[in-house]
Amino acid sequence: MDKSKLHPETLALHGGWRADPATGAVAVPIYQTTSYQFRDTEHAANLFALKELGNIYTRIMNPTQDALEQRLAAMEGGVAALALASGQAASTFALLNLCSAGDNFVTSTDLYGGTWNLFANTFKQLGIEARFVSPADPEAFARATDAKTRAYYAETLPNPKLEVFPIGEVAAIGRKLGVPLIVDNTAAPLICRPLEHGAAIVMYSATKYLGGHGTSIGGVVIDGGNFDWEAHKERFPLLSQPDPSYHGAIWIDAVKPLGPIAYILRMRVTLLRDVGAAMSPFNAFQFLQGVETVPVRMQRHCDNAAIVAAALAKHPKIARVIYPGAMSGESRRRADKYLKDKKFGALVGFELKDGADAGRRFINSLELLYHVANIGDARSLAIHPASTTHSQLSEADQAATGVTPGYVRLAVGLEHPDDILADIQQALSKA
Ligand code: PLP
Figure: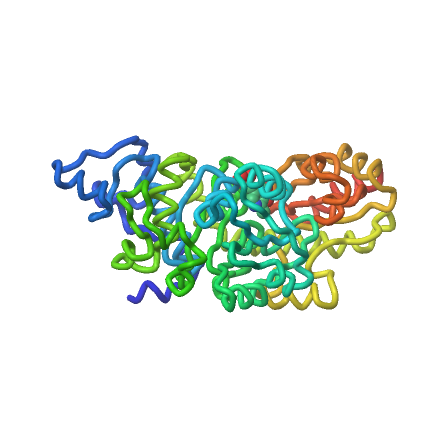
């Protein structure tokens, strides 16, 4: 059987694993160990010199994480992946693996609030400039690019605007200029496959739909293996210049015999080694459980969200519904182009006519939906971004990300849609 031809739904169950080599266990065991016995000093030396790949220490690799990484890489159509402690660690590593002080990257303005803070403040502190541009104009990425631009960054289905990013258009601009596109696909696993549209790197907050049950924080970076770092080596000194922390290794040369994995291998053996934002084996196990059912859950999440969005559109207290399936023009064209089979994700925003007070009254009246700063739980969730996730941003930055005072965000879960709607309707009656 040619396993490379399996569908993502099948790989979610079978990718990266075929029974435990030590015990025959079918479910991936939790390898709760810090370290691994070396066969002898030569074996140890080979592992440290990367002459042989194998387990050294759980900060850098672990068999439970390895199964998760291989599974997610296979599902995404990538070549290799790196599991990390959180989605924030994943976006940080995705960029720090290419950028040093004095460099820049160009990012969409349509971002999760935490990512915005990371880019605007912490990266600035490191001397790395985030150049924010509107995704409404893909050419803005080209105009913001110079010789020190190391990457483009965007979210597939960014909340709260929920306007699908023009992945193919910006990836094509980047490929012409030698700049890889990194896509945060957190809100759209399976319904969007960014690598098929030209993205070079995909990352997830696994905390959300991949885990799916609101139990564990984690992240993952997936290397598409489709970007020619060597052809643009002057743009990527971290991959093409001798690395003093690794015996002067030049990653694009040193890793060549192992396949097109220079980017992700460097991230593991330098950034993860040095910064230590490792996913725990227990959380990797939790994510493996979530990933097995994510294809089925995403379908149901999306179907429930479509029902909720249609009902909200008819409500007299609501000024507008923000949902890709309810959009028109270019926004709708992008949703149809990049999201599969008219599955528009499970995030639904709406704007209450009576502004922030009504937003707060709605949230405080919910009885079934949880009021939490999260998305992608099996349970339905709601939040008022202006007073929570986006409250650190200036009013202008809030407006740029699409947050207005009366905006409420729902992350529609897997309950019976009639029960979700009943709670929303009763809360709206008090809003
Ligand atoms: N990316 C997106 C789109 C998110 O929604 C989040 C968290 O809400 C993150 C990244 C950060 O992930 P984590 O909370 O796992 O660090």
